[in-house]
Length: 139
Image (tube, rainbow, N blue to C red; front, side, top):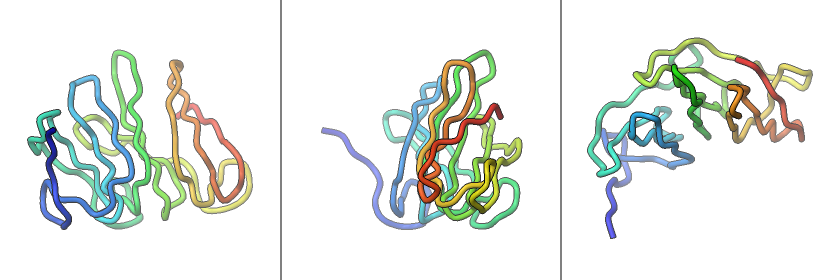
């Protein structure tokens, strides 16, 4: 048995882990929802870096609830933000490449998005929970 982490706001600590994904670089990317950030670790639990701060701006996060990594020659991270009602695209280094979505009920708008998945063609499928639908985008 091997475990790491504890409750709190410091590096390597968590406040409601919501999801994680294994990147093509072999690192774990963890959605630390209530700390409004993504933390990156080796599979041995060594802290590498964190990115995201609370807020609505580019590079900021508000309750990241899910994270997925695309395949291909240039992999990207996609993060669903529950409170910002959007998806944000990042490089593996944590640099934001933009957002998609806004609050609402129309196509292209999200309400309480909960989860996402990236298919083999790089399209992002979003569980638009409070709108009771799945939306697919080609980010």
